[in-house]
Length: 395
Image (cartoon, rainbow, N blue to C red; front, side):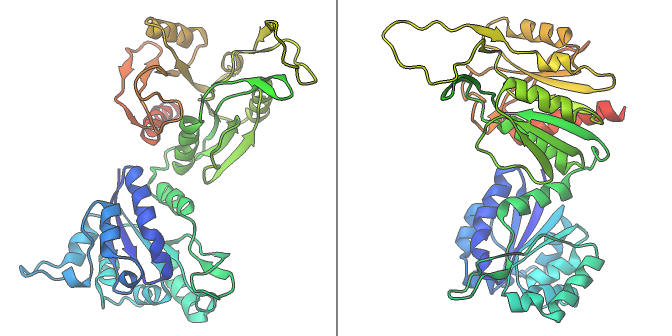
């Protein structure tokens, strides 16, 4: 993934920097941290280093005995710089081109994109000089995320504009800045999560799908420039940045939502775990518990992916198999439904994909040999799948 230079400014929001660094590492990035002297009054160097997995650079380590200038080496290897807890002072130094400390000198040496996450008192944020400095940075192509209105760091200070953007928003913007933009101009439909097929008002048939694979696909597709509509079953996940989400419960609701959103879509990525059956006649009242066995009549749900076979629509399906002949069954599914790609995984393997952050798939494509992929984070699986989607759409 990317080499990210994270500069931590002298705001109380610097306390959030270790958590953000951990999430960058979890996403596969390699952060290198520069902390200002003011930042180290709020957060320790040890906590930043432990979260980033590498030593923290500060003014103390700026110039080495061998004459090497650290600000130049930090800037040279970075794919992106992210300035968190960005104070009015650090913003001013960058806008004026000053290099009086390691952080501002590194910024002045950068050729990579820069993302600022300001955090300061409302009055300082609204001051004309701060706004003028921000205009200079915007003119240089720098990006801003936040601030937002909310509780500020100083005890007794009323809520107001100046609170640093939340970690998820910063991470989403990082993903967008690093993404190749190869899906720009395409509209993608993504499904995720389980469906629920009610037997009565309080009981239903479902499965353990967490929705994480589909949500990773939606998040990464949006980061790569696509217009994304996410049709989601019931999950405990927030909507990814820049994604429009439609929540559904049953298979029939998912089919209706997909039919409504299909016009203008270039691809359908069907990661949802749709229930195969539903009750023939759901009870309108809760069924009382009895001592006798209960027989339920189930009817097949529609095969949504097979139905949505409009001309020019790229279709990626998922399959879960537990049998020894799972590969053969998946190949038959690929051919029967005339899919472009099918991702096969096995929920009974060690570290099942249900609910986890990793997945291991076998990718099938018509006329090609199966590809066994290693166990990877679901975000990385999503990007690899989107590489195939992008190549097919662009070809």
